[in-house]
Each structure stands twice: as structure tokens, then as C-alpha cells.
Image (cartoon, rainbow, N blue to C red; front, side, top):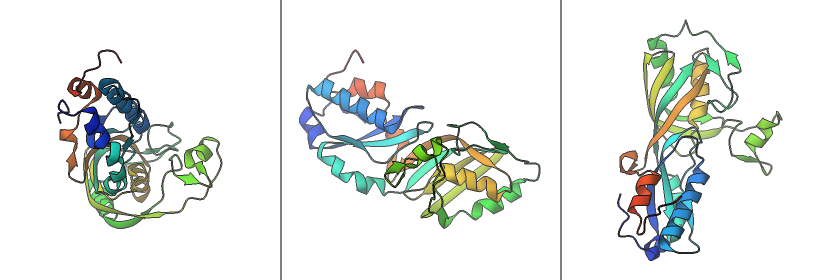
Amino acid sequence: MNYTTITAEDFKTGQILLFDKPLNWTSFQLVNKVRWMIRRSCDIKKIKVGHAGTLDPLATGLLIICTGKFTKRIPELQGQIKEYTGTFTLGATTPSYDLETEIDQRFPIDHISEAKIEEIKNNFIGEIEQYPPVFSALKKDGKRLYEYARKGEAVEIKPRAITIEEFETDASAFPNINFKVVCSKGTYIRSLAHDFGQKLESGAHLSTLRRTKIGDFRIENSVNLDNFEKQLPRPISDF
């Protein structure tokens, strides 16, 4: 993508920007940085900027950021089918279902074969019910679920219907299972990792995650912050 011909007025009217979110950044941090860069480069005091679908800090990949009047399109963009790649690690679980928290339990894996992985994988394809992770930003009685989790408070979480259209696995690096998932809005890949481990009569957690596609938008067409700065109407020399 090339933004060198986009003016301040264009950003206000509305743009869809594709970013490759860095590891350990929150989606909110990236939105704030992009808003600051646009304001600085275009010399404008205020502009609407928002993202169309959160990525966890430990995930990388495609984040759609909308500006100006195009922020009204965020619900439409959030509802599109998404594609992820990454790695499940078998034999251990964490409270957050990923590497945000430390391993809390270990499980045997000697009984797991490639045939078993293939069999279990097929159980997750189609419309299924999934419990969101307790370490998530979903709200319960006005509080984020992770607020309860960090205090060790139990909270009832209801399952949600999601759809997994494709689920491919590669066990060549066992006990690490590389995967590709094509799924509906609201799918938690961390929960998929956790549930996958349980179905294998073991345990699993998500060790890497990258979002590669949202609808027709692809990671190959995204930019990082450095490239975005170079392509702005007036490059910013000092962050």
C-alpha cells in the first residue's frame, strides 16, 4: 500500500489501512501510534481512528485500521471471515491458554499419534460451541473477564457458537503442532488450542499466532510502522 498521495482531508474522509501488528503490542497501542503519526504528518489536531478486530499482544499479523468516516465500517469489517496460522504446544496448559501466563499443568503425550490428531481435528470443523478464555477482554457485569481472572475470582462464562471453515495441522515438529485456521468472528484460537489438547486427552496451549487474512484483505498487502512513516505525506523523523 502507498499512502504518499493521501492528504489530511483523505484521512478524515476515510481510509482503510492494513498493518502488520508487532509482537507485544496491543491493538490499542498500534491505533494510538497510527493516530499520532497521521496527526503529526498532516498537521491536524483531531481525527477518528479505530481497529476492526483485536489481536492479543502475543499475536502478530493483520490489523485493519480505519480512519475518519470509515470508522463507521468497523462492524462490517469485524464480521468477516478470518485466517490464522500458528503453533499449539501439546503436553502443558496455562491459565490464559497462551504464553501470557506460566505453565500450570503438564500432561502425557506419548499416546498421541498423527492419526489421532487428524481424527480430533475434524471434530472442530463446522459450527461448534466454544468457551472464551477467562483471560479475555469480554465483559461480565461491567468488568473485563481478565480482571476477575487476575484476582483469582471465579466467574461463569457461557459458550458461544462459532464456525471453523478450515482447520489444517502439521505434526512434523511434535509436540508442537503447526496449524492454519479459517474461522468466523468471535473465535478464540487460544480456546481452540486448549480444547484441542483436552480432546487429545492431554493438554495444550497456544505458543504462536499470526493473523494472515480478514475477508479479502491479506497480510501480504500490509505495512509496518516504519514503512507507513515513509509513505506519509510528510515523513516524521522523530518518534
